[in-house]
Amino acid sequence: MRWLDWLIVVSYLAFIVWDGLRRTKSSDKVEGYFLGNRSLPWWAVGLSVMATQLSAITLVGTTGQGYRDGLRFVQFYFGLPIAMLILSVTAVPFFYRAGVYTAYEYLERRFDAKTRTLTSALFLLSRVMQCGVIISAPSVILSVLLGWNLPLTVLAFGLPTALYTMMGGVQAVTWTDVKQMVVVVSAVLAAVFTLIFSLPSNVSVGDALHIAGATGRMTAIDFKFDLSNTYTFWSGMIGGLFLMLSYFGCDQSQVQRYLTAKSVEEGRSSLFISAYVKIPLQALILLAGVLVFTHYLFVKPPMLFNPVHESKVRTGADAARYEGLEADFDAAFTARRDAAAALAAAGGDEGAVRVAARDRFLAADARMLAVRKAAADVVKHTTGDASYTDVNYVFPTFVTTGMPMGLVGLMIAAIFAAAMSAIGGELNALSTATLVDFYRRWLKPEASDRHYLLVSRAATAGWALVACTVALYAARLGSLIEVVNRFGSFFYGSLLGVFVLAIGTKRATGTGAFVGLIAGMCAVAFVAFTYPAVSFLWHNVVGVTVVTLVGLVVSTTMGSDAVKTSKAP
Amino acid sequence: MDTPTRPLGATALTVIAVEALVLLALWLAGVYFSS
Image (tube, rainbow over all chains, first blue to last red; front, side):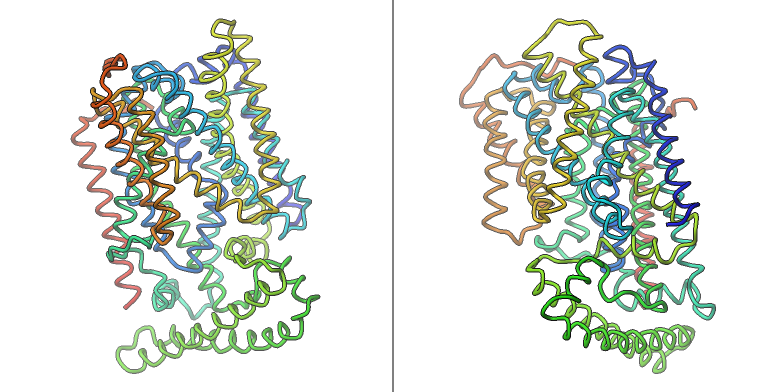
């Protein structure tokens, strides 16, 4: 990074913290701090909803997936628009009119205290772990590629976010999210244009996309029904629908966003922004990854994108073999570059010439992949890390080596913006659930706003500390990230089932919902361990189905534990 | 900016139509660039 890049990153951080802190004055009451006095406009809430969902992992991981697999990851979001429609007529009016601060508070009104406490506790546990991962992933990548100190990088993500979230509450989070979305989208567009202009003069964008298409990277939709494949039309439409219903309808970090809207109508409209924009935005981010692939057809990429692993291999027992692979890699790159140029030149041709050029390119690409795989195997052998992958380093490597001065700073600022917008929303939600579902519910039901605000700010600081600690551990234990993701999938579908019972039925009782929730999580655990090939997106379907069925059966057979109707809101 | 006020049914149809168009565009792009 050069001086202009540093200036941009530091200016961004200073502006965001200032912008967040100036909301402190309007957050001196509990309702202002947690719900923005229910006064925020739909477009700001809608951008905040999107910003909270989009983390730095989206920027570096999704572009990496675009580089490796192409556009097919976009199918993961196919259920999102329908989920937003369903939530706009269920969750939004129910939660809003109930006047609750948390989604779990509603469950006590409908069921009982134990269901509220269990669901809120599960939320706190899973969210703080995920918040740690959200801080950890970009911190590790930036510390490796830019040589930054890891604990300080973790603090650079966590500290400013904790500061403005702690002081300004939900208003600080929402208004900084708006600016952060602008930074992220601008940076992605800048990357796409840089990649387009970096193509050789005799290769057009259409040629480049045709070359990517030859490898299957432009195929976004796969209609095959396959439970083991996360990225198919059906997995996205059905499994993704339930995941999005659960995330946007039952996760406090999202529910709190639309509770801040001026009215039910504005809450609904805020969700429709994601319904319209999310799939095109994800496709654009994936396209950036595809264009990184085409960029590295003509500019020699590193054989391995993670330089830390590379330096270990160079000084390890397999150093000689690695050097041999480097020579193979150079030859494979030259052959593929020439084959790609030939395929681009044959773009307008029909018939045998083009088919021959395409076959030659695919053979050269396969050779390149084989050498990279052999190099990755050497890394796995040397480091003992069987799960090694450098896919998350691909896009940041392009940013730091292929983008011009100024745009590097913009993209690093965007990585910070994406991470901070997600962290801020989550810290705010963690603090809200801690105060409302635990402190005010069980410890101190009556106190002044001043006292509750003090506790909320302390809770935000405490959760930020826990998340940063998790981030440091997650950086050392790569497998922890998988554990966290699996834990989330155990919980999401089952939680959705509890809300289906609460909002969708009048027969369900608190005991039924509680037993159903436990049964749902056990069923998901059973499926996950017995049929590991089944994609985690389908766990959400299993969870919601089992909770709803078991909840209804238990409610019917055990009868009245003072059945409450769903009139509450 | 004022609150957008549209009947929910019309909004639902618009959301579904826009998604269908986006998916169609993605599918066509895949077919075109993979040929």
